[in-house]
Amino acid sequence: MKLNPEKKFVVEIATLQSMQSLIQWVADLSVYLVTLLPSTAPSGTGGGLYAGAALLRNPGVLATLRELLVVARVWGLISNECLPTFSSTVSGYDVLPQLFRLITRIWLVARESSTGHDFDESLIDECFLFSAQVCIS
Image (cartoon, rainbow, N blue to C red; front, side, top):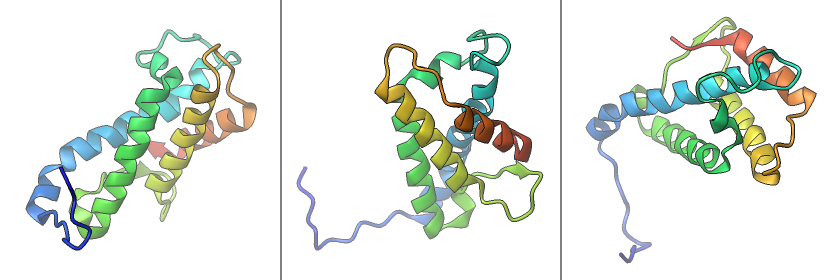
């Protein structure tokens, strides 16, 4: 398929609104993984016994989540109705950019080491702080 750079591609607002459930699911999964990280770290309890813990070490899954979060953000510029909703303990806290940043940091660790390199304490602390500020609804 050849794309004509002069042609503008438009996504209908109704189509974006119909994608809101999928966008919400991607955001909820991302929030779950970020909040799961402190529990699965070696200093946490339980090791990798939590559902989805292996996804934290899978760079392919994390890269896809990052890309989908970017798509959601771009589509949100067109229509706010397609953006995911979050419950936050802090008013005015913009969850989506923070979520993208943390998923990116987790992805970088997973991508750099296939030998099970541990996440650094600052990342674990940021994920723990994030989990105190954002709830999966």
